[in-house]
Structures are given as structure tokens and as C-alpha cells.
Length: 409
Image (tube, rainbow, N blue to C red):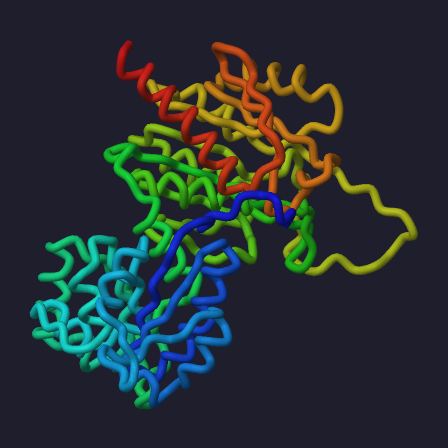
């Protein structure tokens, strides 16, 4: 990505607290991912954490001294726990043990990390990691609930192989889920609270036989960031995606599909009771007229493949429209605005987002986009090249305006 483009965590300060869990080494990856998105990260390690990873590792990655003691010998530190707490826009405790959660829930401040948390007025996010027996302990669960009631946030642990050799709940959440949880803490709002948003993403696959299909290079990135941004604004979000390599999104109900027909069925079903549909998927316009149940064998030097039109999902939904907002995308290589406006009219949309895959930074799989936002009523707005998360913000700003108009009528 162009270094001049804005990063999601630009100018944000994250204080990373690492505690005594075997998963402490995974905090290195979390630190790096936060830095890649623009965050300035400093690290506090408990004494137990240093038994798993040396402070030098985090000092090398962060570029800052790692704080390990409340009262280091031969140093005058005054109120460093206060200054670091004030510096932080967010405190992430990763991994978070049952011990650190219990101490903070009880108001204990007996080391640098717990003292900094006690002094902080910034959001605090826990990413717990422990054995399945510990994570089910009623005392631990009561501590978590007490902290939640006070506004502390938790990133749910995953399931799988644990250090004890057992399998179950307690694994540290995947890195992308932890970073997403920090995003929610820093940028979350309730602007779309009570609004149900349905987003589609990715390509579809139209099968010729069990091993061959027609598809397109869509990565699904635009749809996924739209879903995440809507969730960060407090919306109840369902994401219907074709096959992608993308990671699932926090606080989003993700439904996987393969074919255009499957996507149409799921969207039609989910549309009931939905307030906003954002159709960012690159749905196939045609599918094979017939699908072979067995692999088609190589034969003649030429082969004609009859195709039939797939059902246009937005056109189908617009016929059922009962006050909801419909947003579509137009991928055009020539006469872009004229064709987008025609689609806007033909499909009964409230907003269409036009882009050209031949333009630099706009092709499939890119992390950036350059869109023209064309509303049903009003003038088009041409956006400059920007990260897709920022483009998603601009689209959802428009959606909020449209929802306000609907409420007034």
C-alpha cells in the first residue's frame, strides 16, 4: 500500500500487557499486526510473562523499553504508571490469565500492569488464554462478568489444542480477532445501533462438473471491511460471502456460499427484517446451462459451453423492498458513470458505488479503492484513492444519511 495513505491505527497508542501464559509468544504477532496498521505500541510484562518470552524480544519489536517492574532498582521512575496510562488510547492485555483478570476485578494493584490499568481511563481489552478447566471455573466467570458490567471488554477465546494436551475452549483468539477487538474499542460507536445490515462479498463459483467452475478474481475485501465497519457502528450485521481467503470478522454473523443461486437464496431469506443491503459481491452473471455429475473428460479440440443468465439478486430484492436501503456496486471499464446510473435506475437502488478495475489501485485483491458514489437523488461524489476501510466509512456515512431520510418520511 502507498505509504502516504492513512492507516487504521494512525496516531493511536496501544499499551500491550503480556501476562504469564504459554500463549505469550503470540503477543509478538499481535504487536506486529497493530504496528502494521499504524499503532504506536508499548509493552508491559508481568514477572510470570518473562518466564515464557524475554523482554528483549518485545523491546526489539516495539522499539521501546519494556516495563517489567513497578519499582526498578537504581532508577527514579516517579509516576510512570500514571504517564503511561494517560499515554494509552487503549490497553490490551494479551494473553490475559485468570490471575490478572481476578486481580483487576478485585481492584488489586500490586505490580506495574495492574497499577496502570487502575490509573487508566482508556478502554481495556482482555484476550484470555488458559486451560479449559480454568476458563469454566465459576469464580473466573464471575470476575469476567463483573468486569464487563464496568465496561471492560473481552475477546472470546478459541477452541482447539491446549498446552495441557487437552482439547477445548481456552486458546488465545486468532491475531486478527484480537486486532479487530482493539479496533472496536478505539473506534466503536452506536451510530447504527438497532439497524440490521446485510452485506455480500467475494466471488461465486458456477460449476461445470465436480472439479471445474467459472469464477472471477474478487477477493471479498471490500465486503468484509464494510461488514466490520457496520459492526463497529453498532449494527447487527450478517455477511454472506462466496469463497475467499479472508478471516472472519468479529461481531458479524458470517454465512458462506459458493454459487450465485446459493447467494440469492440466502440473501432473499436474510432480507426479511433487514434495514440495509450492501451488495459488494461479484456475483456471476452467467452459469453453465448444465452441470455434469462426473468429471468431463478431455475430448474434441474445441468445446462450446452453453451459459444461462443467473438471477439478479438486487433486482429480485428491489421487488420485495419495503422501506429498506439498497446499495450496489458497479464495476465498469468504459462509460462508467452512465452505466452505473442505468443500473441504479433499473435495480431500484438508493446508492451505487462505481469503480474501474483497470485504474491503478482499484483492481481485484487490492487493499485500496477509488470510488464514485452515485445516489438516487443528488450529485455524484468522486472519492480519491484510499484504503478500503476508509472507503467503507464513506459508504456507511451515506447509508446513515439515507436512513435518517427514511425515518423522516
